[in-house]
Amino acid sequence: MQWRMQRLPYVFSIRWIHKGPSERNVMAVDDSIEEPTSGVQKKRVPERTVNGLPTMYCFETCPFCFKVKALLGSRGIKYSKVEVDPTFKTQLKWSDWGKVPIFVDVDGTQVNDSNHILHYIDSTGANSFPRAGEDPEQDRWMDFSNQVLGKSIVAVIYTSYRTSVQALDYVTKVDNFSFGSRLINKWIGGFIMRMVGKSRAKMFELPPRENLQYQLDVMSEGIQGKFFGKQEPNGADYANFGILRSMQGLYGFDIVQNHPIISGWYNGMQDHSGV
Picture 1 (cartoon, rainbow, N blue to C red):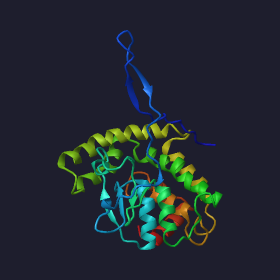
Picture 2: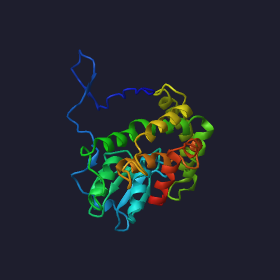
Picture 3: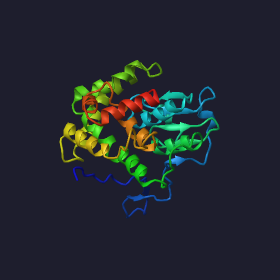
Picture 4: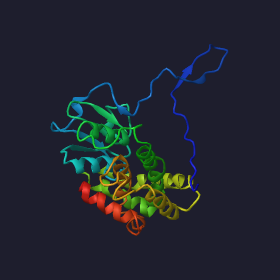
């Protein structure tokens, strides 16, 4: 096994408890506060749709957002897009879920987390691939997209400050971001993402470029035919294509282009999705 994962710290809320004049204030974990969850949410938020269309809250270069873009593109579904400020996330203040993508359907149904969104969109439309838990192989490779491939490309793209700033240059062209926000997102964001890239690189035994090459070799074992879904794409195809699509035009994409198996699969998925 060529990769190892680091356990992320448990997320908790902190409250102060006053024990009286002779005792010191101490910190305690408040387990009574419910954390936001992935998947379909109970509360509907129709006011968060734009122009009466399904709406996705996203970052332009977010690999997880590209998963959803690929599926929407393949189905010809028209949707609105809200570009989220990567640093301040002002556009997500209404939601307890502070990650992208968030998908809001026309009836206000909110779905959090990219793989959950893929299943939701397919289940309400073509219903062309199995739901979570119905196909172990599809589940395996959809998990791979999050747990391995997504982290592998981050280590490559943000391998230096220069490549990090290059990846974030798009924020300077987003009209609804203020001038100050654009500068912060590009230059300070570049520094932050360089640190993230270093932390992701430590999760794997191989150097970033060699690791991505290895993970593409592993991934290619799951492609039986034209796609993971054989003759037609399934959830694993959209999930992993989205991750790699976010690299296009950025440092390290040549690894994808030059892979003997993944390059052909990638081109097939791009033609299929139009993304």
